[in-house]
Length: 88
Image (cartoon, rainbow, N blue to C red):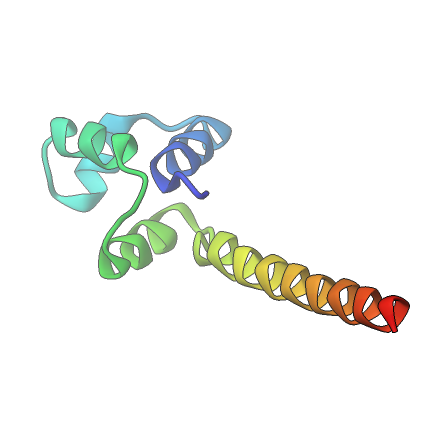
């Protein structure tokens, strides 16, 4: 499960920037940034805006999760097919 707020906070720390700096860039109060960081999910328009500000594609985390889920599904299908074949 992705906790996007924690990922945004980590990227802020990596850049050496503060929540106050991000709030200024988002034209909001710092308490709003604190709310964003506590969230496990976020509006896509806001995430796009934050991605542009921090010059990082946060959507890649969701893409990776989809790819991993698909790979797990394929793996499960192969294992189920193998078990079916072995029983016959």
